[in-house]
Image (tube, rainbow, N blue to C red; front, side):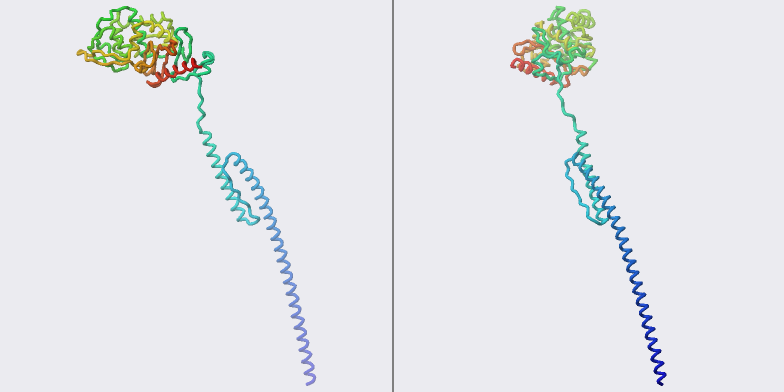
Amino acid sequence: MHFFRKGTSSILSKWLLTSLLFVSWIWIGGADAATDQKTIAEHSARSHKNAKTDKNVKVDKNSKVGKNAKTAQKTKVKKASPVSNTHVAHPAAGRHAIRSATKTKAKSHTVHIARHSIRHHRVVRAPPPRVEVREVSEQESTPAQRHFPLRLSAVKAMVVQESTGETLFGKNIDQVTPIASVTKLMTGMVLLDRNLPMDEEITIIDEDVDNLKHSSSRLQLGTVLTRRETLQLALMSSENRAAAALGRTYPGGASAFVAAMNRKALDLGMSSSYFADPTGLNSANVSTAEDLVKMVRAAHRYGAIHEITTTSSSEFGVGRNKRPTLFVNTNRLVRGGSWDIGLSKTGYINEAGHCLVMQVRINETPVILVLLENSGKHSCPADAVRIRQWIQRQYAG
């Protein structure tokens, strides 16, 4: 029994000791394993943190480079356009924030570029500044003309002081152009040169009707007028049937009349002029502003032409019943009565535009005006008003 107790106690002690050693070994091994795992985990975390830090550093560097580049672009855009720009600050960290800021900044930059493009587009398409062009060359102009430039709407024009022959203004004076009914001044001179009976009656017939331009006329077929009345209607009211009748009843007929017109032009030194009919409806009736000054000066010497062309209106019997009809001067400056006009003649066909020639006294000085190829029926009188104001200003200066 004593032996049993002693043996049992020894075995139990050994078992307890063995168990204690085993448990200690397990505990120590587990602790070492946990320590190793913790060390591995910490090392892994440090490696991951270092890698992430390197990546963040790269991102920050790239972001900084992009920020610098975009800042330079913004500076250029600001210089080109006054539109204000809102800067977006980059966060210190965070990929999502960086992307968001970059997108916002790019959008803002695009908007500014678009606005700059629109402003630039408007500047490019803006109309050029209007520049006034002198109509008188330095070679032709006088000191007074250079001091007070004259601008006319007529394509060809000339202003001459009649008594001295001095050219006060010239614009395309040697360019040949159709002259329309200004032709009728030559018609009147050729007729008066022939000394035909002015009281002789002339009847308007079919041959006098305009079949070229189909212009209208208030002279009915069968109207009987004296040669003087026919000339007055041709010059004052520019009646084409009256002018055609004067040529038709000329000795030798219309062809002889046209030949006499061209001889007269050569006698007056109108070397750049040609006449094809007595009405001016034919665009082959051509001249220059320089030649027309010569024609106006010559026509003004005819008392009958002076009187007829400065009459504002007259009444004539028209038709077989001689119905009283009022005819007026085609030049509204004559009808106005405020001008001292010695001769006047207007003209118009499509090829010639609106034309006006006058002999007029301005500041007691006789002046010849020639205005050719104007665009509107009121343009020639308006140009004449400008010329009168221009001359008055020169005398006043």
